[in-house]
Length: 253
Image 1: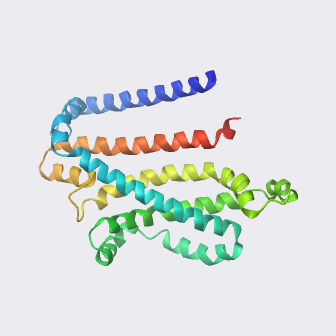
Image 2: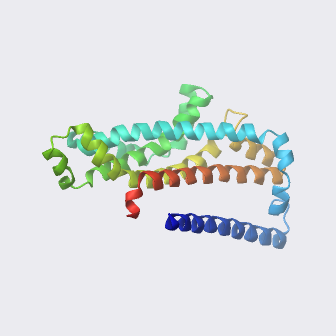
Image 3: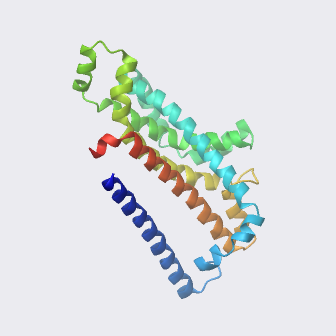
């Protein structure tokens, strides 16, 4: 228990230290360059009232909803295909080349096509984010399954365990660390992609808020939107870390 508290304390300390270091560098650059396009962090943080009046919470919730839905759909697809490809060599031979061919395609280049097929609503935005991150998750989960040693299954096999029991007690725990690592990368990519996607066909979302502030030459609100978008990504990272620590306690044994 004491060791756990110490780990949490150290983790919080690193987060706090990183936050202050980031803002210190930002403040020094702002005062040194003296550019209107680079306001000091104190000016940005003090503009929270105007941001709330501009509906920053509605924009944040819209972006958070898109990220959550996209990650959920991508993870579900990746678990199904990744486990299937990891267990079944024929499935891997069939789907592997298709995934390798599709993965390098710049998905943002498909945005006009997706928007033409599915209109400019929420569906097209979620589809693009899913296309951007799902292949990475599939490959990570497939490789994690294939890297599990066959000897790990022998004990359960000797007790007559079913395939579902083997998956529950061996496969899923074994692939969780790699899945969480890949999910962290996917979260960063999804958040970055969402900024670009939200500049098309919508008046809700932090991408729209940031771009709209830039067009109105309101740099303080532009930076405030960027900070909020970063904060959403940061909170999602913390949630993944928390789930990792809860579900993968055996890593610290």
